[in-house]
Length: 534
Image 1 (cartoon, rainbow, N blue to C red):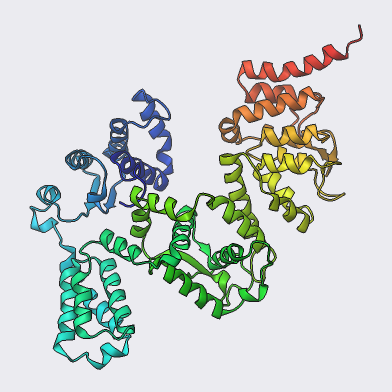
Image 2 (cartoon, rainbow, N blue to C red; image 1 turned 45 degrees about the vertical axis):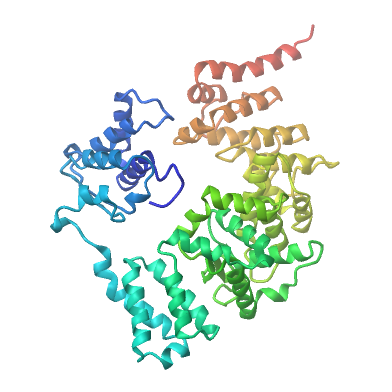
């Protein structure tokens, strides 16, 4: 049960169960909404009692669907474990709901689930053979162990690891890594035995000891490495970590493109990461979708990841966060560093422009929302790409960047002379941005300009008038309302007839609440009032 504090709570567990049920059985969504309405549910406020009743109702015999859930790590769940046990017991009252749970052998869970030997398994009893095989294969990779494999003292070393593991493979992995480090340093058998004796009994203590042993030279890089790897929604290619290193060394220097197509540089990056993270971060081959030449081995085809999800959870603890803040320095900002790194990576060999631009847009959006600024490097990027980035910025809703870019004289309303008007791009987005539409109109964009046999205004209305778009409109209702009102107030005509044959007024009355429809249409009346001569 790894994850954030909310994910490890009973409420988070219930929400996960509910999401899983509805994802697997989408036909049950209307029934779920109906049940919540009957419970007098306050939309947006999740109450555990309501969630429990909803999950119980959906798993009842009324629907004829049987469910089996595997819940790992009950001991990691936040809150009172007695309440958790009661909640699970309530959940399994339904004969169509079966649950298999796992936990460390804490007394409360053993009392609740460990009394029936037919339904109780000790994992370590089933994994000892696999653990022994892993230990032998790992240690046999070093010539020192090969030379003494028949020595009973080395055999006892393996036996001790298997006995202390308690079925936890990650602990075994970390211990074996420590022993291999010792062998590389020509440790004697007595030294290896000490390493095993001093090995912490639990994973968290192991992580802590590893980090405390990091060379002081790497404190800053270690903190930044962990912070970045924690912050990204998906693992990044090692090429970006290489670029980050280059920018730290000399922000004004160009990136040497020859360094991105060699397996030698992958090995160098791997060594850097190992030194800074003490092995908690590694690079793994991953065929990133969209990379040119991705079948080759280079910095773009290796992802940087934690060795295990438990490392991620450990590093998110308050203790570790405090250490990161102390060591990463005050000016450190993940979004800014990553945005600048991806900008610097544009045009490098073997990289994917589509992937890189998506990442730039993502981090630029984070910066706009959290800091209310845009980065100078983005304007340089747009010049480098002949306006391609401005188009992506309009589509992605980067309002501050678009406003800054259009403040130039004269403003850019088309990326190229014959290209699609930026206003048309902004209006045909299922999640339109009032800020960007307003900026474009203030800069002189014309909603009545023709492109591909229609206008931006006409295309916007035809999209709104389509069937099946009510969900998008409801999610962004205020934006749609204000954009329509703004366009009409600037002279967008109400006499336009949609492809469906409907008139503008009919569509607005159909898609919006009466008061809002009246507000939108009143903008046309204001124009008429102004235009009537006195």
